[in-house]
Length: 206
Image (cartoon, helix red, strand yellow):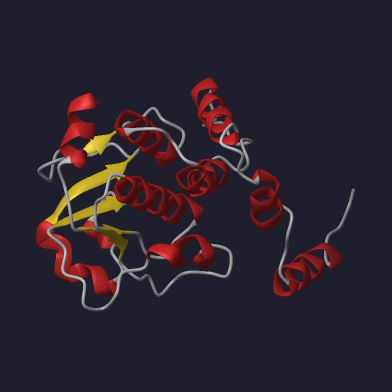
């Protein structure tokens, strides 16, 4: 793993891709990785993703690539196949060398980093960033978004002791995890509430 971290340290002018219908996992991992690379003095951006929502966009916005940015290296977070690329990412398919994901892959790129037993891609990103240097609050906040959303606020069966250990380390940086919990797990849109109300109104109890 240290070898992978050192290889990542050697990259510069990096463009980070997120998948279609971006969720907190892909966005949080990408933003944290971008912050980590920038902390090393690297030039790094996220490729704009048209599918961002009101909940994920704030974590993405500080790292969005300007239109004129030309990368030397292309990395993805939580993307196991080109089929998950947004349309604007397809031109980079042949240059996509660094998939970072928990999904089991079969070495179809030059530098795959996978950990199928991990609950969340955020755990993998955490270990990479920790190998590169101190985890700052700027990295920890989007990374907490990634880990918490990928585990259903630590309620899914994929959650492990390692998951909680990573979350604890992120909390020690002083991030406002309560705001993350409120936005992603305690807030519902009007449309969702109306849909739930319609479903409940037709329920029959026996």
